[in-house]
Image (tube, rainbow, N blue to C red; front, side, top):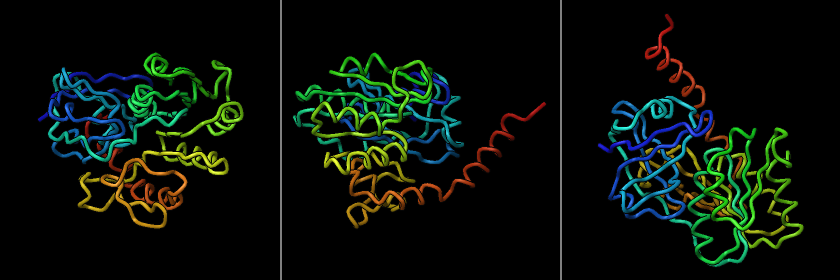
Length: 278
């Protein structure tokens, strides 16, 4: 059992989860993830590692509430325990001095891209952070990312920020004035896809962190298979970082929809059982 040190709602539908796991915290690297089960009847789900503290022995993730398991996680409290917390899993991100790095993040990807941006800055790169939110109240960790960024941009659909364009448009504007040596995009599948398509004609290598359906996280089940450069890869052991220009995005979109209806039915049933209307 792993104890929850902190669980808090950062913004609507996005939560922070800090877990006491000294053995995991000592080995965490940027770009890796953990597998967690909210309870003994829950499913195993992957969460990107957003931060860690090897001295305290804690690991932090940011997650979006989308189904039954993440809904269960969102109501846990400090002191509660989870039966499964495994990690760190996956290959660490390639961290070295490239030159100028643009880190694009949206939704839970804002938290996930933070340790990569921090490590890239420590490696001597110029870091440009570009975050995408639907509205200003959905932005979080602004101070943390500003602290590791040389330039900082936010694109939003409301009028709070100057830019109301989607990330691909902003990205194209940035590369007109700045030579970008690498783009790193973390977040929902659509965000990573559009970033990859925006940089494809420009020839800028774009790294994405794929989030397919995943079970064991060690390459044994094969549920997380993706097609990259016309060959089959397992996101859990071959990734989760891949070259976005080589990913078969249409296949990934299709596979991620496989259990959509089942997930909705599961969530409705669980909420009916646990929160019956009076």
